[in-house]
Length: 240
Image 1 (tube, rainbow, N blue to C red):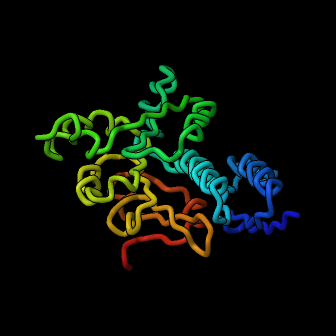
Image 2: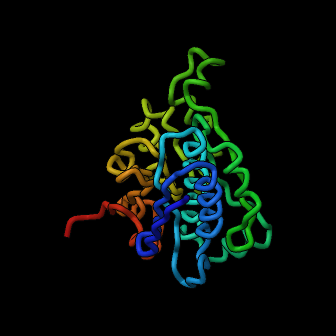
């Protein structure tokens, strides 16, 4: 038996995991909730947040759900040039929207599944970038500045950059490096948003939620949808 509770105001769904049936239902829920037209609710964002359980299957499902979040973040956060001729030129050329993972990739095929989708008719391209530790294995004398210099062009081309927990040791440097770039920075590393990252995945009451740093968004020239802000667990903003 599977017991579910839906909370569409906060875009969450609680799932009591009782065997295989719960997993099937959760995957179905993810498919339903991955777009703005989900459950016939136009003009609303319905993002999935799944109650986690201690199982290997659910751990895998966690990153499937997070991948769906990343897709929606790209849809509902606009860059400065989205209303200009630059977007029209990009659409004409069908240049892909780039989503990059920096460091260890725990998403696997769930990110590759996003390439079957599009945002404003533009295809999605996934890039996996080696972390600094991996980079140094082939270049023992390399400094972090060398790494950033080599990766700069790729990072600047991103619409969204997911920074893996494997890069936590250099998180402050990564955030400083991307501070002025008009890209969406996301991580599930603790205190990512409070340190200047744009979006941080958090586990709140055993559910996947997210915090948004609106100050960082404004500094980057990014416009976050008010609907997305309403779904956030916490919003870091300037004091009035």
